[in-house]
Length: 407
Ligand code: ATP
Image 1 (tube, rainbow, N blue to C red):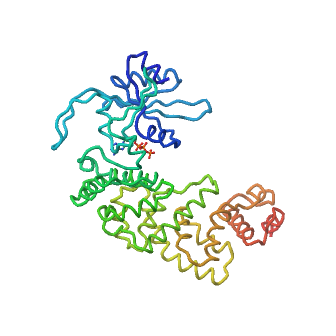
Image 2: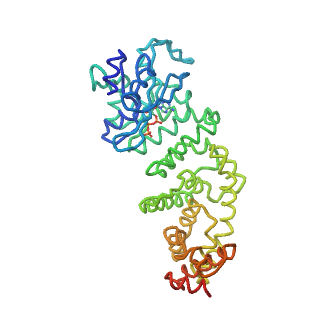
């Protein structure tokens, strides 16, 4: 459709970037980025009209997003950018060159494997590969397009690791040298926390973040971001457990999903004091709205750990363990489970995550009203007591709970 519309508007249109890379790697990718040579906004409006959707425009950058509902009722988004013919004035080192607009657009990208395009109008399906992306995919290499790439944007150091680990590729020798050079020039210090957060979040959303974290450690990227974030053997073992537990939780298909960045942030800061953790939270640009909650829950967890172990050893009832665990966010529960070596306690934390925290009494306020109780705080206390009895197996059925409430 984009090709047909492009042809009728006289605009060469390409699908670019990750979609093309994953097409060649035969991997699924739903993120379609289009580039039109000329006026991408016109193409976006035409697409929105055909698809019955709407356009969100960023006129300043000549980019837009087409938002529409697909045949299965799901909302879909298409990014449409504009490539224009212009002189490319590179800071230092590189000469001023005139590139065709799509070549220019691709040259701005991070790695050769991400600088591929497929033409959609006219010669539909023609692969556009100016920088050896196809060869690098075949050779499984992550390679930048020019020597100043990491100077231009140091987040690419993290992106290189992410793609390398995701695809089982390797960062090319020259590119690795450029990363180390960028680190020794302290270019990471120039990165804003917001940019770091974007990349950190992507890393945590990978299937195996630990492989990325380990490679970052080996390249010295953690140290460049914050010296204390390096991976000690203890932290590495804990992150491994966190990765396994996150996988376990994902397979339970609960609606509530943990924030991956928070789960791994806790693991990466394991054993560090409050001040350092707070500093790392700031440096990684993590969401301000959660800052106070995260830091206070983390402190709370320190004292809770020993309390839980003691209560477990004393054979505490489920309701007593629930009372201790209730204040914790899901990410902290996963973190707690990962660091607990006491097998019965670990089992109870997993029971709390999967069952106990979801339990409610089988009777409601309406049942209490029918028993003649006026609505008020007492009802809440009775229902809480009924739930405790249910968790501890003393009132498993609605009848027994009603009897308990009546008493
Ligand atoms: P993913 O599968 O993780 O989404 P992606 O390649 O689609 O990978 P995006 O971050 O969505 O990643 O970026 C889309 C495209 O934009 C990339 O393929 C790349 O061409 C370009 N790009 C993204 N970030 C940068 C960057 N920091 N520097 C240069 N080009 C970039």
